[in-house]
Amino acid sequence: MDMQLSQLLFGLPGLIKAPARDALISGLKIDSRDVQPGDLFVALSGETVDGHRFIADALARGAAAIVGQQTVENLLVPYVQVQDSRLALAYISAGFYGFPARRLVMIGVTGTDGKTTTANLIYHILQSAGLRTGMISTVNARIGEVVLDTGFHVTTPEAPLVQSYLAQMVGAGLSHVVLEATSHGLAQQRVAYCDFDLAVVTNVTHEHLDYHKSYEGYLAAKGLLLESLSRTSAKPFFTARGAVINRDDRSYAYLRQITQAPILSYGLTIEADITAASPETYPEGLKFTALGQDLDGKSFQLQVESALVGEFNLYNVLAAVTLACGFMKLDAEAVRRGIKMTDAIPGRMERIDLGQPFSAIVDFAHTPNALRKSLETARKLTNSRLIAVFGSAGLRDRQKRRLMAQVSTQLADLAVFTAEDPRTESLAGILADMAQGAEAAGGKEGEDFYRVPDRREAIRLATRLARPGDLVIACGKGHEQSMCFGEIEYLWDDRIALRAALSELLNIPGPEMPFLPDAAN
Image 1 (cartoon, rainbow, N blue to C red):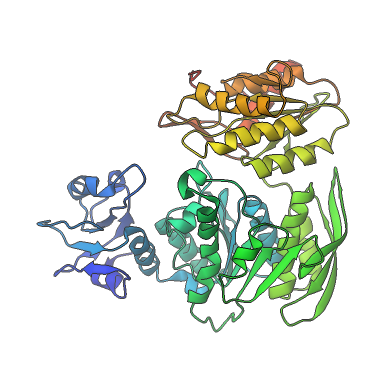
Image 2 (cartoon, rainbow, N blue to C red):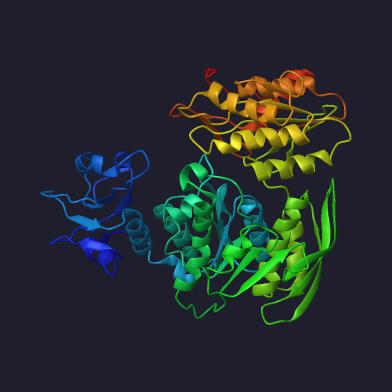
């Protein structure tokens, strides 16, 4: 699929200087190493890397044109100067693929915790209602029967890939899309020009303050999804606009003020528009009665049962019900069926059972709030001890290291602090921060918590310490398929590692423990 550069630049926001000549564009690239002859290279200015430094490399590889924010003279190919390379990339990507979101009902889901589960719930509900639905999550992209991995780590894909997925969904005859939007994805314009019709915010808690600098900055990034609703052009096939927000979360007061779109709130308090009556959570799942009114003021009551566990999943299910019944007014039986279809999400409270005499779970919890919710849920799943294994990522929010260690000291009987993507930061320093947090909460090293830098050995230790009836939970990585040491991503999966440790403990055949480098310092 080729397109003239002039076509891609038509209506481009923030255009400072357009080239005098045209070029035929065959693809879009943001990494100069991926450039093929005929590609348009967009130079992005990142936190640590400036894409303008690689313009020469892109040209050497055959780039047909360049887009950037800086003034660049005397190039042998057309150069487009813009105010914001990321916003330009999003617009050009959408245009290159024919603005596919304009032909789809777009549902955005954001929040600190619960995004992926809520997106999956909505996806299954829409599927159950007979709507041909696709999904782009931080785990994978679903396009009809095709499931595509969206990457090693959890973030929204870059704009060219997002728009490519949407175009494929249009080509496959899909009508609805559920798109999970991270704060980075929103702040970096990766989902700009996705023309969202409906938005869901699960919660906004302590996370990513290394990037957003403050909770207020982080909250503002999440709010961009709601703000975008007013910029979506009318779609004759779907006229609804609206936002679903958590009435019980501290983000509610801010979020309700920043959008002109109709709002429906959900929660366990009576102030919520849609709430859960008689909620019950138990080891096999949860159930409640959803009560409330849809956007037109019509009352509804829905009996809900789910195989998902924990109060935090009750909120996720309630968010999905609010969207499905409150805004989309879907058939009640289809909503119930869709919720029941949503089994455990990969890496979310996922049980690992090789016949060991204790329970073992892998969960993605990597924020203080998520860890608290996971440990509270895990506590209800055992009458014996709770043993938690987790770390805190390097080059990320330092505050949460102490906070997460304090949470584990309060809620777990034993904790093993270990590696979790230390990147170029000192792993020993990260673990020292965590140990200080645990000690501040009254924990004693060697009794209440251990420091084991090697995540393989940390998981092995937890399984060796476990007694019959205990529960071991490995948090922080979930479904992720790699771990970063230095600047290298090593293949890693907590689920494989836990199975390997259990098979070694039980002396039965099992997977080989994944490799990790020695990074004790």
